[in-house]
Image (cartoon, rainbow, N blue to C red; front, top):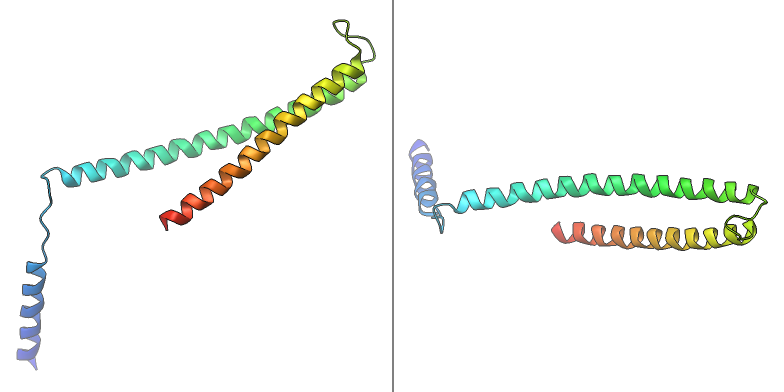
Length: 120
């Protein structure tokens, strides 16, 4: 039994010694690890920038809503433009920008989920 185990150990040791891979270049491992580090840093920066963009999107949306409410309270012409027309113009522009940003966010989320599935 002990002799059988020893021969199996020798067999596996011999097999593993033959399976050793030679690296194609002397700095191959360093290059690969450097690329991995760059990718991790890029993902971290990307995540931080995405959080900042969401923060500013929310702050801009709140600012636009507050400004829209305040414009409805003004009853005097501003720069010779009727306040109702100015309010309507602002609301149309605000809604257009808001919906295009929401559409872009939805497309980005789909792209990120598809990219995440590709990596798995």
